[in-house]
Length: 441
Ligand code: URA
Image 1 (tube, rainbow, N blue to C red):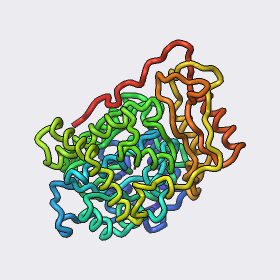
Image 2: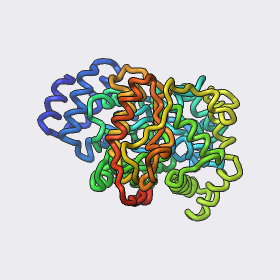
Image 3: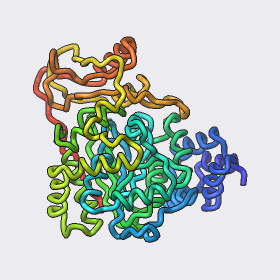
Image 4: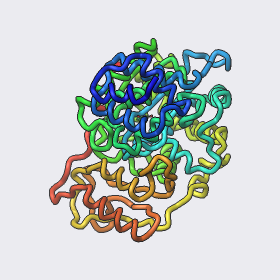
């Protein structure tokens, strides 16, 4: 096997064989394939795509770079093990942290394998890493035991479960090769299959705040993941979500942890976030066989939120993963905060009509809240809170957002970029469209 031969063939638009894909992914694990070659591979794949057969081979080779979780051995009812994922979105990463405790409180087992931020979309694991003590890469045994005991856990790339994804992911993050149906399917479905669930629910963002900017591309990705799930014998529900603006009111690691806790405790709940969370959790509860239909499942999910059981479950899961026992009660005391926190007002007052949400995400990266190089550490304090929603009045006293930055100079740079990323009109502007565009079951 010669990595450069595989690269030459993919570069020239040829179809790779199963053996070539398996050898290349195995070579990533042994170190035989280097980072520059992974970069060349991701760019060639981005440009030339992959056939359905190649995508399935990639998913299986990535899954087989590690082990697969065994639920029967842990005494868990496999029928109730359901996984969840999002293909990424600006502000979307907190959704997983909301879904996991709600469904775990309802009796589902959810072994969630999430990810770091990717290009301009932040990630769940960067959020969780902002909490002292959080262990996002436990052994498979600890992961399985935590899920068996508490009903849920959220982990990141680990040396045991789909480790090839962790390596390829870091290279994609900084080489402008994320928005590829083949690579996103490989990344997401290898992790979902390694967690070995009985069903999966996945959201695919569509719009400037997601990787798929058009409905056609979002549908292509949704069908690609649905085909892989069907091929693996697992029922799936894939939802295409409307992400042409920031989802919820915060973007960034520590600030999104605060929005997560405030949502679960009921202190503050953004309407689009609530709608998406209820849609996802009800599909998961039905797949787990805990409700006969979506209306019953939605009532169960809402009950977990309203009774405080979801907030308590979140605390239990966080503690099991190494976080302070009083994290939910005192989240603000446990999280780092930025040196400069100030509202960004628009240059002229009016109504928020649109946003270049990709640029909002890229501003976060530029200010240190995301990675520019694979080895970069990110600053958990950087982010945006109180982000205005489309249609909101903005002006003096009604900011576009509150910007959390490391210094005055960075705050000024970030504020200028955010002002340029939004359109403010004198006449009233339309609110965001409904969060769910369509579902593919
Ligand atoms: N989430 C992942 O885990 N991988 C992707 O490629 C995109 C979103």
